Length: 169
Image (tube, rainbow, N blue to C red; front, side, top):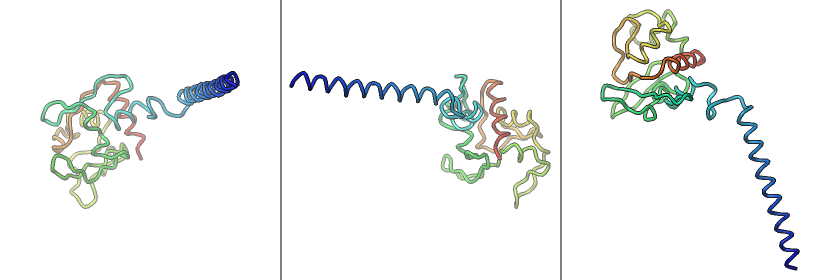
């Protein structure tokens, strides 16, 4: 009787082990053949936009005029939303309207918000968008509104972020 129990446990244990190995192999294959990279993000730019972290492991930090803040505390999506359309945001006991930062909106000839005064500057270029992100200035050199942090990141990460903004619609 003892021998039968031992034999049964070996069969069950072996089956469980084989099952776990199969699950691990399938998960590994799916991880490397799936449509996304880097933990579920389609691109490094998307990961930067949503998490303020880079797949390269390079630092990304923000400065809102109160000293550098770790990028993980704040992201582009924190204010502009996952779709880049902006909207009403509460931060530091204040409420403000985050602008639409989709590439098609920033680079349009007429990109003022409906019901508000038209912008005094022309459309953004790629370099203007990069300066807005890193220096907090509009195309005409005027500073962006208070809540916009100045982001510090590598040139490669900045290029990836800009390419991601071009995909938002």
